[in-house]
Length: 366
Image (cartoon, rainbow, N blue to C red; front, side, top):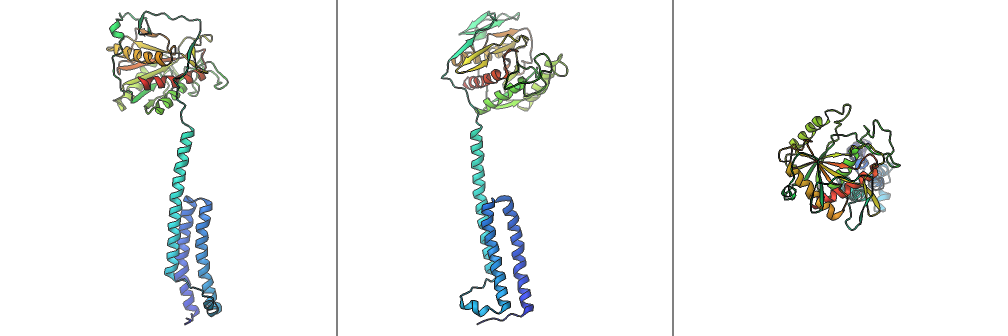
């Protein structure tokens, strides 16, 4: 049986069918633009366009009186319900495609992270100290760890025994002399804003701190790295200003025990470049500076001995003899507060950055 439509009824039918179809099509188009790639979106849109086209063709055939002809060709008319079902199906396909795309994006992120992984230090390498013109003074020694006591304190053997346990899950790094910099190199060529100093954090000791931060993170050690200027515009009073920074960081992370004030050796001599060759690369030598004018400074001393003992095991010669001075250096904050000097003015930033992967390896191993 063929049903005959009047023009008025036909218009009503068109309004009832095409308006919701158009609205849903616009919604789907918007979602598709935001979440689905062009090739997937094209497939979904074709399904929608096909659905709408079929509906329009049916109406056109009705209007032109071709219903009987198409009935003979087993032409199936789509009711409103059927159209809605088709659209609902397209929506589900779009959602599935979106889920697939999200999965692909997650995999892409994982791949990008893998490609930027930090290159950790190896231990199956030979370490060789590069000769220089400085022979440090040694007053005390414990298991190969050398100390230069420049303070008025008497250091006993018991004070050097590293019988100390330290929470290394979180480390605070800051710089009392943030602007200390190195000899320019091809990789890090810069204009000094002082005598081996730079206010550009990409070329100062702060950049070395960034590397130590990344290396420690690669071992699962959380780092708070503060790069506040404490020696600019004024140099005097640097330690008073950096104390505020270190104390604030500790207040926000009270469980932290390791606090490192990362420096460069202050000797302004372009010919002095203490370094070691580890495997095929050169790395700046490191040096602990411990202040003896703090109550309980022996704990900081023991921590430094503990680190240097492990360093001698993995990379002998990486550390120069430790210096103990009559000073505070803000090291009263925790039992593992210290200054670590990375290289000197004759070293390059490349060499000092290289040192950090070995220091991070050592800290992770203690």
